[in-house]
Length: 228
Length: 248
Length: 66
Image 1 (tube, each protein chain N blue to C red):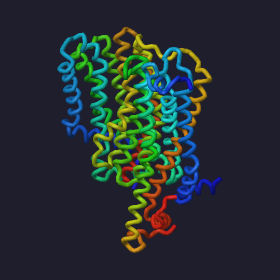
Image 2 (image 1 turned 180 degrees about the horizontal axis):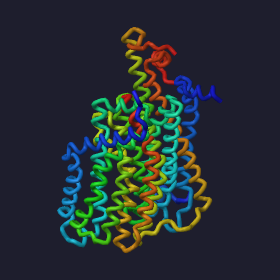
Image 3 (image 1 turned 90 degrees about the vertical axis):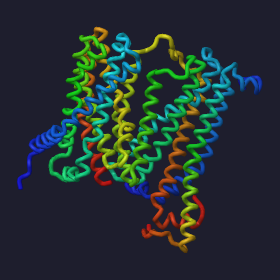
Image 4 (image 1 turned 45 degrees about the vertical axis):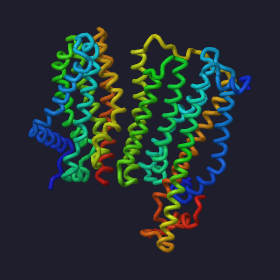
């Protein structure tokens, strides 16, 4: 039997994950719906005054994006772990680094990427100034990719555990904080009329670091979980 | 060199060694802690701006310093256990987490108590406090992950991965929190200015820092001993130890 | 000693409550981190000793010889 090359293998994995996701459109819709619902909670809790909402909007949007990413990253490896295909993946000759990256990329495309694209809509609902919307969308696109990679580490470490759901948030929320700081910082800078570029550059640097290192940690975590 | 390395991997040897270290280190630690605290609280002059409340520094700063260093000890032990598969290293790593969490807790609580008379509030979202709080969460995350695994050897491996991820992240978290704070800094609160610390205050502080390092070592060894016995409960030497009814 | 009397040391010009409570909490935490592993070790050994006595000198499942 011919062994597929690493690139072809990863492309197939990515396609498989995307097809699996698209076959269950409700699961793609869930994080977006969660995002919308939590956004709707804030005016109810803080009061509908447009000024306060607009002032809090960068923080609100970023925190909610972070939470919905957290909820979805828990399940990245879950079903493959349960049906045993994860074990097959670990035994495959292709480098685990790349295949893990394909998993995370698929997860990001189905959540963070869509969230970034839809965020202007919610930003308008919260009364964020239109000038800050490009900064919001681009910071979300970059930042959620970092979140997906870091979340993947937590998912890999907890996939074998029965009560992984709460645990994963305890493990990885501290690592989300820098992304939150710079992500909402970008939007606030844009609101204040300052360039958002430096913030986006820092998010990009974090993304580079995460792409370089996180797959190793995810791979190590998966090996441990499959052993368990 | 290698034979020493292998000895460190041997549970009974490490158990006996830690016993004989603790026999003299533990009393010294207690004496140093008491001496440093008495010196700092009763025999140093008050700070000319903060008055007597500054005396909390003699526990606050050492706890914070050692809590941060403890994370690196934990991460290094985790790396050793992952790379060389040394069982005793993951015992050490596991032992670091609760001690580190306790020290971070001390630093946070004493800092908060110090803040009340000095800044007039129990809690400020200052860069250092926030970073310390995040460190506390990181330690508790390791403890929670360890407890979640049934198999303790796998638990230790998972915690090792987590603590290594934390090591890469701690500088980023610290820098970003620092930076976040300088952006949002409230104007009303002034922190310690550029005053250098007087020798009469510095020496007890240094003594306390050393004492807290010794305390960390003692607690680490004590935790490791308990953990070693539990992991090795099926071996002959632990059986003999238990049958003899003594623990040293 | 810097303070003139014990009462002055307890008072610390109004800061005493803060300083002493901080030291007490620290003392509690230190005692806890030193005492808890010691107790765990002692209790485990006692438990194992009981097991050995009940099973006539052998621990159930103890096979490995080091």
